[in-house]
Image (cartoon, rainbow, N blue to C red):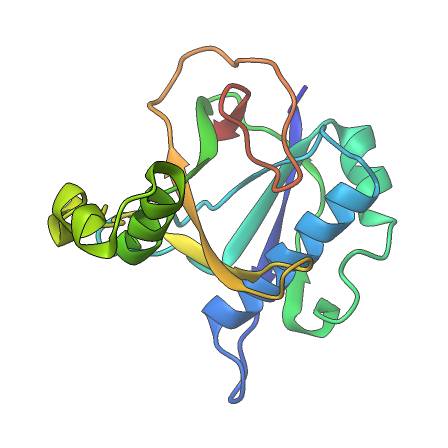
Length: 188
């Protein structure tokens, strides 16, 4: 149950900007949630904005008071702690609404889609190009955080999507990104 929260605000310096620090913080969170097999910590970005596309400088963690206390006593912030300001754990305000915060994936690379089609259907490059025109690419419009895969080393964008406001919470588990397609977090 997400009854409490705490805010982690990144503090940029002359060498490292907000987006890079937020990405580094989120990357550490993701790895630690996976390593500790936690599904009781959710995340949100209180300064989330689609226009302009921005996540802001604050990562908000949601969970029970006990879960957040236990989590903050682990060493998951190592390497970015000097660039953070952490709030105290606090109860969620009574006026908070609820939203699902989830990942949205886009098919934005038509060349990759064509290669996949050629492999699956045994088509030539020309046939795949006719079947999948350049206009088939999705145009991402959501805020995102840059991450790097620890298994392949490839950089990728994790797009964050907000669900519609809900008057009551939806219970469920969070994934290793602190996101869910069903469980809601308090939004305020």
